[in-house]
Length: 105
Image (tube, rainbow, N blue to C red; front, side, top):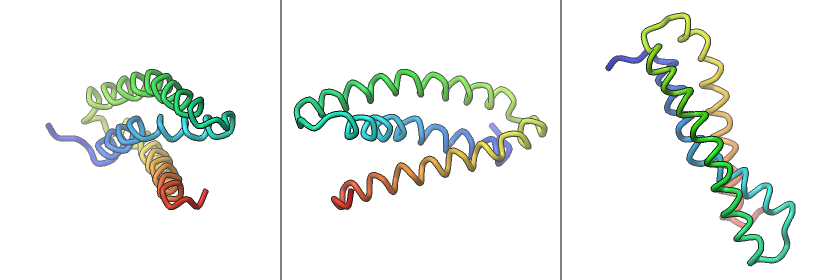
């Protein structure tokens, strides 16, 4: 199966964001609301599952559409910015987790 470059980048970056974005957003929301460690963990897990149940289907539907239109130059031009958007979101999530592991935040 041959994909145009921007379409393949968008599919790849959006899939990575679907996997890593839900826990990151859940962590941001949990740390702002909860101070108790036990309550924090249950809120974090609940929010991760909830966000994953919302993010994954939306991104999978988007990726199915992109796979169907994989040879369309019109779609290729339109998704170039979307690929960069997902890449920036992935970098932000990665930086957050690296800072979190290093106990800098």
